Structures are given as C-alpha cells and as structure tokens.
Amino acid sequence: MRPRADDRAPAGLLAAARGGERRAAARLLTIVEHGGPAAEEVAEATHPLSGGAHVVGITGAPGSGKSTLVGVLATRLTEAGGRPAVVAVDPSSPLTGGAILGDRVRMEAATAAGAFIRSVATRGHGGGLALSVPGSVRVLDACGFDPIVVETVGVGQVEVDVAAAADTTVVVVTPGWGDAVQANKAGLLEVADLFVVNKDDRPGADDARRDLELMLDLSEVSGSAGDDRPAVLSTTATAGDGVDRVLAAVEDHHRRLAAGRGLVERRARRYDAEVRARLGHLLEDAVGHLLTGEPAGGRSSETPVAAARRLAGRLLAGGEHG
Amino acid sequence: MAGTPIRVVLAKLGLDGHDRGLKVVARILRDAGMEVVYLGLRQTTDTIVDAVEQEDADVVGISMHNAGHLTLAPLIVCALAEAGLDDVPVVIGGIVPEEDRGELAAAGVAAVLGPGASAAEVVASVRAVLGADAPTS
Image 1: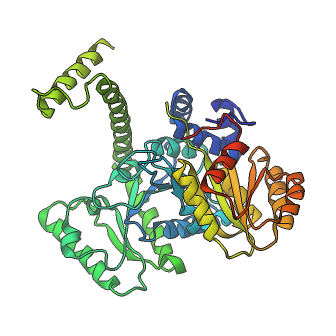
Image 2: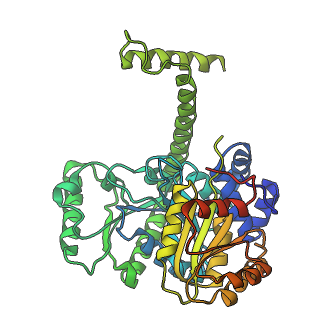
Image 3: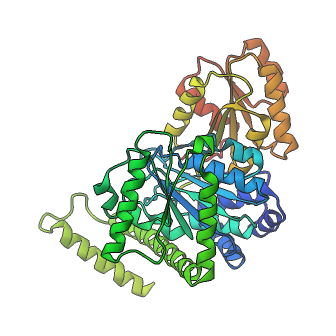
C-alpha cells in the first residue's frame, strides 16, 4: 500500500471510525482489501464488535438493475434515519488486475443522502464477491453501519457466494431473463429469500413473475421448499416504484430470522463459509508454491491426474510438519 | 504479496456533457491495472469529495471540456483540502489552454492532461503524481 499522510495504526483508525470518522472507516477497508498482517489485526479488533448489523445480499445478472435498486434502498434507509453502508462489487480484469467500478453512477442520490458506499474489485476471486467482503462487512458492522448491503458482480447461474455471506439474499431478475426451464435449473434461484422482478415497466414482467411463482410451487411439490416461501415482488427501480415493498420484505425477513433460530444458523453459516474461503485461498497459495518446483509439461510417463495425486500427497505431508 | 492497485476516482464536475474522453481514460487506467471508481457526468464537489473519502482513493481525475477549469479546478482542490483530503492529488484532463496551466498548478492541480495525451502519458502522469513508490499493479 502507498504510504499516506494518514498513517494511523488499525487500533487508532478503528476508534476514529467508531466515532464517526468516515475516512478512518475507508482506510480500514483498504487494509482489509489488501490483506496481510495488518488486515488480520483489523479482523481481530472488529470480530468481537460485529454481529449487530443486518447483512443484505443483492445479486442478479449484469444489467438487471442491482445498483439502481441498491441506490434507492440506501437512499430510503438514510432518509428514514438509518445508517446503511453499501459494499458494491465489480469484477477485476483477469489479465491486468485493473477494474472499472461503476456502481456509484447509479447511487448518486444515496451518496447525497449520506449513505456510505464502497466499491470493491474482485481481485481474482470467483463466486461473485471479493475474498475480502466478509472482512469489510465486519469493519462496517463494528463502525455502527446497519444494514450493510452487499451487491455482487453481475452473476450467471452458479455464483452463489453471497448467500453464505448475507443474512437475507435478494435475487434480482428482469423481464425476458429466461423461461420456466431456466427457473428450475439449479443454482442462483435456490438461494433467494426474496425475488425482485425489476424493470417492471418492460414487456414480459408478468411472465417473469409467473415463471418464478411456478418454480416456487414445484419446490413445494418436491419437498425442497423451506418454511418460508420467498416473495416475488416487482420494481421499477429507476422510478423508485415498488422499492418500499422490497424494503419492508427485507426487514420482515430479518425479523422472522431473529425471532427463531434462523439468524443464529445463518451467522454460523457465514462463519463457516468465510473459513472455507480463506482455507481455499491458503491452499491455492500452497499449490502455486508446489507447482513452481515442477517441470513444465510434467513427466511424460505420468498422467495429469496421477501428477495431481502425487503433489497432493506432498502438500498434505508438508502440512503435518508445519 | 502483490501490491494494492492504485485507486482512481474519475468524474466530470458541473454541467459538462462530454464524457467520451473520461470513458477512454477509465479504460486506459483499467488496462494499466488500476481500479477506477467511475462517477461520470454532472458531479458536484460534494459527491466527488464523498467518493474520494469513502473509496480511499489515491488520486482523483476530473475531466473538463466546458472552459470552466479556472473556476472549477480550484474549487475541487479546496473542497478536498477542507475535508482533510489534501494528500489526494487532483489531475485535470480535457481542453486546457497552455497559458492556463501555470494558474492551475498554482491552485494546487497536480497535473494537466490535454487532448493529445497518449495512453502511456495518461498512465505515467497518474503514477508520477503519486510518487515513485506507488504500486504498479
């Protein structure tokens, strides 16, 4: 990281951030995104202070209107006296590591209203989020922001990390996004606590709602439905239409989670998912290290699967010593 | 460990609808491995300061094609300073006559990029205003 005029240690930054200094919170987020020993220090300090905020995940295909919806949600929350924070994730280039983080363009009103918005690049992490997102959420939570809205990159069918990082997951679809067969494919649609059909002013909105409801009917027939059937709501986020109902549904979901075992279970799931992601990251580093000692193109007599098994054996043996 | 990418806030300040250049610059900086927080058209000093603060930006780039640079550029430099963000350099891009450059520098603008600037010059200018120790990727 570039040295700054503001070079306070994490503990000093956290105290300032908890006192309401936004730049200190922003610096903490930079440290968390960067990783390393300072990030672990921030995690140690914020872990016992977090857990109070409601974490809402917003996901959906590119261009479905997630940012616009999040912007209106954050504006309404701020105007109602709340202190929402937004973590908006966009993809990093796999080639250069660069990124264009454009979510703020759709969140101008929220910025003006006073919401805290942070744009985050994935920095090589798959699954629709950045590896640092749970740590960023912890910082914002410890600083008193609530709720914390996490917007994923525009996703396809299988990027469901957000469901394990949030208490409430909202899946945004648009008219024409797919038919009833798409709706019943495995993946994204299975993790929704709430569906939003955005761009309700476009043709095909009724069909999209019908296909989702039909999919939810089949979940009940097949016995895979949970206790709570996700609501299917409609919005035209650019005009702000329907957003209040989404907000009410999100808050209602949180209340129901908190009233039962739901919230405790989701928090345990969030913890486990972060451990798993971090472990995967550490293993990936170890694998990279291991492969540097291997000849390019491998050994001619060995199949790739056999080579992987041999190397995995070495990796696990090394772990026992370390 | 890989360095943290340079984070750049890019915006157009005030009433100026020409954002083609800003989009080109965003793409150039992205391809140089930087993280560009793109604000786009019709920003105010407040929205830019908020973004620089919340995004913990290393540098802010303002594009101007409405001949307002002598009025608006000092405003954003002052607004950043008032918010305690005077360590974040301001780079101005766009149509700036040669004879205005001295006045902008005196007002605290770190660099000016004209319409003839190449992609390499844009990237080098951003790195230069951050000093030699800036991360490269």
